[in-house]
Amino acid sequence: MRGKTAEDLKLLDLLDPVAEAAGYEIVRLRLMGGAERRRLQIMAERPDGEMNVEDCTRLSRKISEVMDAADPISGEYVLEVSSPGIDRPLTRPKDFETYEGYEIKLELDRLAEGRKRFRGVLAGLEGDQIGVDLEGEAETAMIPLAWIVEAKLVLTDDLMKRGAETRAARIASEQQTTE
Image 1 (tube, one colour):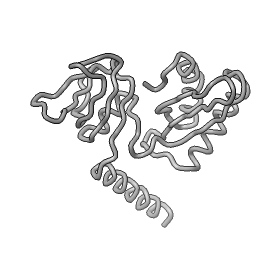
Image 2 (cartoon, helix red, strand yellow):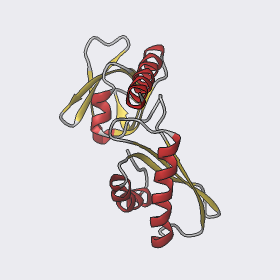
Image 3 (cartoon, helix red, strand yellow):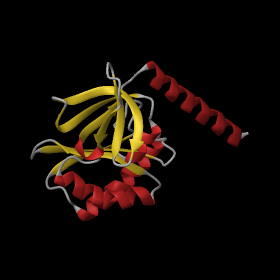
Image 4 (cartoon, helix red, strand yellow):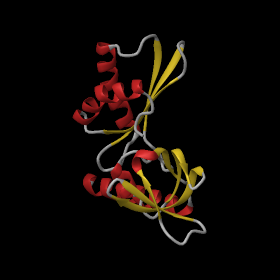
């Protein structure tokens, strides 16, 4: 889920160690566009889940150095490094643990109960499956991680409240360290 194509996965193999050495984790990588002008989009964060503009700039410079030396993409491309945002993609097992209780959208690579798309409340991670409480269903649906093509948080009031509380705690912590 962190990369969609074989080319994405090769780039992750190259760039994961770069990000980790700089103190970041790549949440998702996508190389988009055709043969002409391509876009390498990298969503990343620090281990604490934060990612500010300075972090994006720092990681972008580190990645650019390696990309210039290794030259793994033929032709021109634009590098974009960003935070995953509030309504972030869920790509790693720890994401499914961290955001338990929040509403998510899922897309699967196969039909399950006659459909590929689901929306519900994330009920957690159990082994290599996630639990999702689907509206109108009595039992929690268990979906193998291997079947998930895309998973994303839904922007809700609860999620926005969590984001605001996280920002407030970070600002309070920063103010204490400067005093």
